[in-house]
Length: 199
Image (cartoon, rainbow, N blue to C red; front, side, top):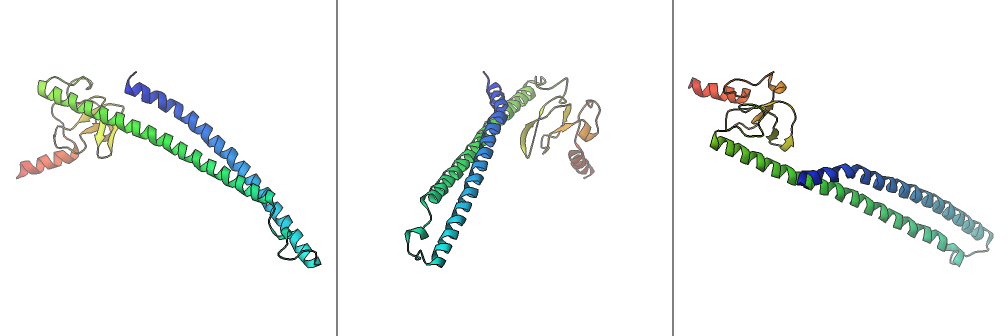
């Protein structure tokens, strides 16, 4: 199985895994809110009982009834455990997505290296690269620019300036409907070329 196939299988399973984790997070959140609501009610009742006892003189401020009940404390501890579980699930979801992003970055790096090698081999041999569609430099290629490499679909043309910062352009983005004949320069490189000729 190729790296791309493995990546695709992993990516296809990602939404389902994340959906399960987020559903569990929602369930934990509901449980936590219910426990907190019950705990607040219990504490309010106990505080009211203490106030009544102090007013009636049956309880002194230092008696055992002035302490929060063990049940209320247990509920608080349970709430903390649920909150910790929610944090752990969120971290797992983050790590899962981060792992997939790192795999995608590795794939894109390998893909970019392969394209560069193909381009160098094609330039050295004078034979069009197999990844180029048709003759010349136009075709379906990956688009590599300042933001890294991303797969791009549709007809593209490469600027014939070897120092072009963008290099590959979609036909529609540069006003082309078909592959240009001969050398083609993007608008930025054409301006630079004309300036140099004018000197």
